[in-house]
Image (cartoon, rainbow, N blue to C red; front, top):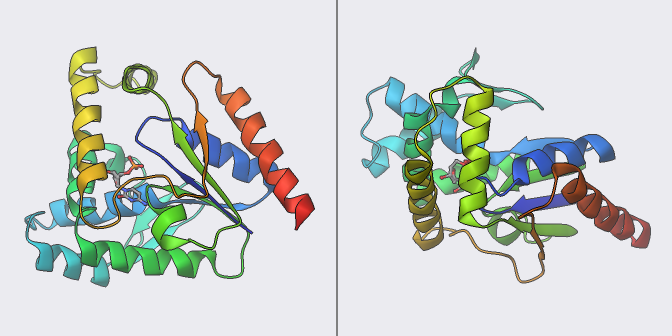
Length: 219
Ligand code: DC
């Protein structure tokens, strides 16, 4: 069974997807970390992120491995490095490259082959797994997402930017994700919309789990 969870940054979808995979004992796929890994590799190699052909070639050639917690590029654990701000920014640039999307979508389908998975991203229910049995579109308002992001940075003891800067970055990233030509962020017509504003992670998880279990029972 394939469960897709799409939505904007900071909507709570990552926490929900990870928790759901754990509760269902499904494998978990964080597709954002794949775009981040491509950006990371390009930055390492001083490849101009706007040079579409060079970035696509890099994505094609790189060895990319994911397990439930980590992401590895050419055997190196880059889990923490791909969360750095310059990589976050770069990931949304490389994510607008259609060749990169095609490459990573292929790898995502390969990962899912023969498994039960919960996969999270922006295009999982629309472009990569249109046949998925259960699709969610998870959102929250931009202010709440910015507040969550600021808390997360505090918890990681990273220098947190002022709230207004975080909010602006979130809005810019949303705009890029929603307006790009290739597989823009949008809800699949058959996705269940979940607004997490004001909800605890546990409450979101309970809601998702009960829907998936109903679908599993109906299969
Ligand atoms: O979810 P995230 O913040 O780790 O994603 C990083 C970037 O990759 C973000 O700009 C959106 C993009 N992305 C995408 O275009 N498609 C996906 N399936 C996952 C992420």
